[in-house]
Length: 304
Image 1 (cartoon, rainbow, N blue to C red):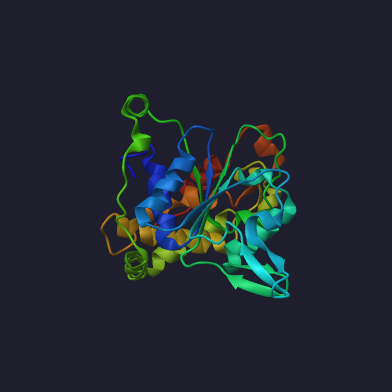
Image 2: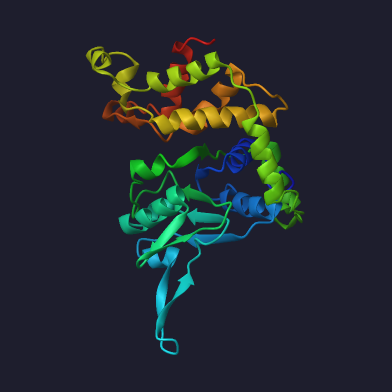
């Protein structure tokens, strides 16, 4: 992937982590930073089926899931599958679609199935949703429901490349670099089994849970609003604990270790939790983002 995408190592690492974990990814960045190209390249690297859906305000659930079509010859309905029936689905500008489309996508993400009429239809295995959104332009967009955000394993922030890498992009014609598949579904299963074998000490697990619980504002915390908790309206859910635990194991495996360290946990916390925090109006007024809040929490929680 690095042969085609220059200067986005953190995004590639996050995509590979989610791929092994079997989780969905939310990519956030301004246009032109290779988000769509990265998803297409990932599909080529694994040799899986890929579909791209451009989300727009007039998109209908049937445009995503498919529909039932009446066949006069057989006097019965037949299923016309939508683009969601693919291994890797790119939901481009996901926050531009209305609530009904988001509900259909939520079922696919959580249940790995879509319901048409009275029947539910299983989606291919593996199945990944990789959604993109533009953090700048908000006109004509819909805020993603918190329940849907919580289903994304990680939220990756895509930043501008360095000067050196931007020169490579401009002069190197990287988009035409041929990609040879290096993974298949069997190898992916083996990677998942290897990740499951990574050892996590009880103290590391307690450390992960302590970080998650530190994001939650209790009654006693609300009384001391002058501190960190005035920036947090709601903290991370239990899915956040599971996401950090899973990603830390995969991070250790990709680094060539069979055990998790506190540094593995610290590395994955921003990607796994930044979209799970609901910040207060004070945070917005003072331009405090989720990454800043999480960085402060990591300095407060005792490291084992």
